[in-house]
Image (cartoon, rainbow, N blue to C red; front, side):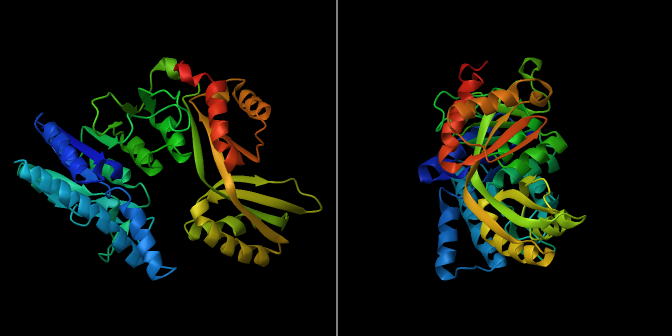
Amino acid sequence: MATVVQKYGGSSLADADKIKRVAERIAASRQTGCQVVAVCSAMGDTTDDLIKLAHQITPRPDPREMDLLLSTGEVVSSALVAMALNSMGHQAVSLTGVQAGIQTTTLFGKAQITGIEPKRIRKELAEGKTVIVAGFQGFTEENDVTTLGRGASDLTAVALAAALKADRCEIYTDVEGIYTADPRVVPEAVKIPDISYEEMLELAMLGAKMQPRSIELAAIYEVPVLVAHSFKDSPGTLIHREAPMETRNKVRGVACDLNVGKITVLGVPDRPGIAAAIFEPLAQAGVSVDVIVQNASVEKLTDVSFTISRTDLPRAVELVRSIAHAIGAKGTTSSSGLAKVSIVGAGIQNAPGYAARTFRALADAGVNIEMITTSEIRITCIVAEEKAKEAVRILHRAFGLESGS
């Protein structure tokens, strides 16, 4: 019997009526003869509300207690979906991340999955039940509850699909698939019928609405992922190993990430080991660094600038100040009013003209580029946050994406 893992986002579970509609969709899938495991996010804005509540208690909530608190949102929605299915005459059982066997590291708030032992899930499926799993969470060797990071119910779903050797993973949300740009920013954006893991990973890392670690895991285990609307029978977007040949060597989409902060270390001594001295402590603190630019050395001194998540900026600034003092740098500066705007497409680095067209389009519109980074399949520009949406529209138009060509 085929096994399907489905994931439903918070907007699809925002109230009782939507929860019943999700249960109806799960029941319809079950009636096709599939075994179904459904992963649920927290209802609506529950996670944000819990974070606000915690900060009303204390400005610095204990990380362990914070994870335990935040995990409850997904538990609530999972239990309600199971109740809805049972009331419809379909056997269902809800499981927490612990009960589902999702083992993680001890990095609270950003835990990584170390393994999954899905014995309980297999048992319930064998008994003919639909299994509803609380997303976004797992447990440590000490049986502490952990969370996997914002948006990580996608990761839970893909990881379960890999562990169960499911036929596919379906991500249901409030949009009909992956678009050439955010339709709220670019109304002319076009849905992409299918896309490679590599291209989708770049789009996700650069702000597209999907958790990047879930795409990485899907690529490793070759789990096909369908992204579709929770309540519409539209084809969606299939994320898989290869996209059709005619889609290669072109821009597939434009992504925008507003969660960008920048730190510059001024007057850094230009000698071996300095870069490691700056970035190793950040890595140990769980701060991911993205774009890095080092100026040419003048009198054996240089400036080093790098971008990180804006949410990591306050603690990163504090850490970098102590690093700067230790290495004899002149000081640090930081800013938060930035955004990443990127074009993504397989092969664009191997074909002439993409970088030039990107820079010319932004220049003609008066959008200043502060930093640039590239890979084989993307070109990313750091721009002022207030210019980001305009930049997305400009690049979408410059590469003719509104026509779907």
